[in-house]
Image (tube, rainbow, N blue to C red):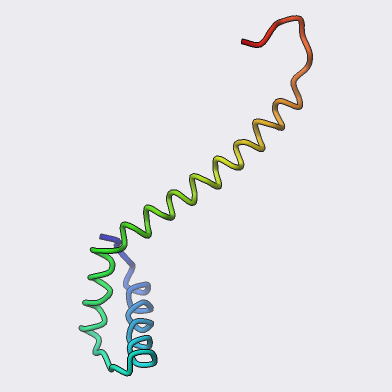
Length: 83
């Protein structure tokens, strides 16, 4: 389960309430909106979290490729053969 600070949770609950009101024409109370947030946090949150990790890994791998290329360009020729 993803944990949110009190301030984050209140902001998310307000967003949920506004979405239900504007898009679904349904007025949710505070408790109901918190239940929706808890459900998504427990049941779906890990999928978003893992996707974020994969995206971060892809960015890091791309940056490391650039660094490796830059290091290769700095290499000086020698009589040694690379293995």
